[in-house]
Length: 122
Image (spheres, rainbow, N blue to C red):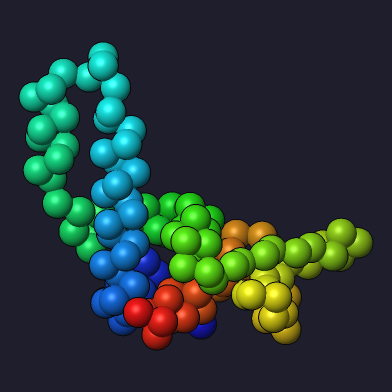
């Protein structure tokens, strides 16, 4: 399954709302600092996070979304067979049945499936 962050946001609009709000909340948390000028904070608060911006966050690091899914009781576990090494994911304890040579690819595939599960759940 080949898919990028932008496609996930378009295909799963209910999940996209949750993910965009999560990124916005994290951004606002990070500027809650006395050393940052209030006018800059206000500019950041007024910024919207459009699909293009959020998709770049998603594509850069899929694992950042694990917290979003945890908040909705969709648990991703990445496992490894050390001897090979081969990586796979389990969602809520169910093995994907697929194996990858790269941890990041397993994470990406898990996020794709979790996005759909979250969308269906909402």
